Image 1 (tube, rainbow, N blue to C red):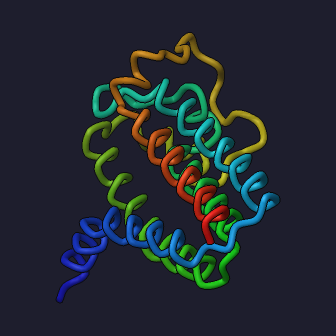
Image 2: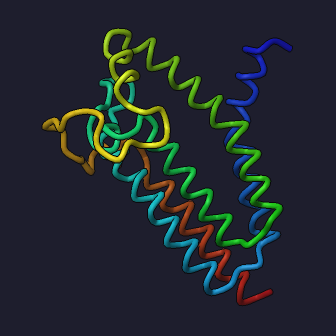
Length: 183
């Protein structure tokens, strides 16, 4: 199997393997009030970052260089990392910690690479400068790009269907809370 086929396979299975991980996390979870409180707070930070990013993102229409995209080229994926860490905190399982590390280190380099290639094709003139100025993943502490006139737009948040991440998080944390009371 060639490199391109392996990359395509990893990219195609990312959601299924992530969903399985969440199910496994619920099964293995040993939540406490502290782990729920800290985990939910961390999750809120990740969802907040994703919300901020989606309110600026116009997929495939314009290279987004406002909002959190001034600090990192991949704020949605950074938000996913934060949310994933919140799950690890909430469930208190070493197995899930290792599952998450394996998942993130296997899937996200591939996802980010595929996304980068797509952006290079769609925005061949703008992307190289963006790539040179803004960090790939971990954000700079000060903006790498100057402020522009683009503001957060709830219509973009809705268009990007980010509400699904909020609903998924609410479902997960509700089930985790229920598990704490039942088991």
